[in-house]
Image (cartoon, rainbow, N blue to C red):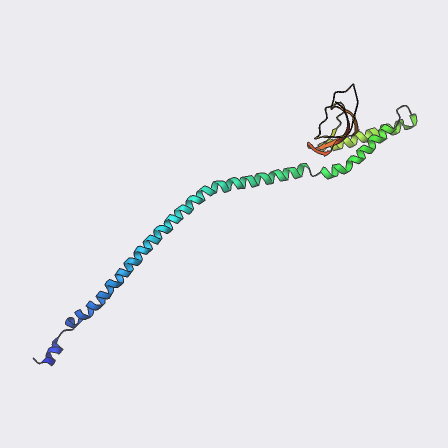
Length: 196
């Protein structure tokens, strides 16, 4: 056979092994790079999973604290609403106190033995009683501390006087009554206190 015939009779299989070997070498290099990348990805995945576990643990620790904080906020809001409801009348009651004072002065000004003012005094006393009863329905209480120990939370001392018949720091006279709304002081009682 001639060289030409020999070349023609060569099968493509004999030529292919040379061509296959070259790409196979490249594949090994690519597989090596992919192996390195896979290792890096596995490490990154492990780090990410560890971070997720840590964040889940932190969340589990914070959740009860957040629930407790929400309960506190809810409780404070309920207390604020309750206080607002209880003391909504504070300014209104404070504005009515001078009317009560005026009625009390009118009663004091009327003389009991004078027939001309007797009917007036009875009418003012009934009005005064109705007024105080109406205020009492809304938990407004009178502070009339004559004979009691001086209490700086509810009383305002106007002066101190010598009174041998009274104990020291005892209220001997009330110049103006005080008032409470649901236990909160609206106006202190103005008093005179016995010296010690």
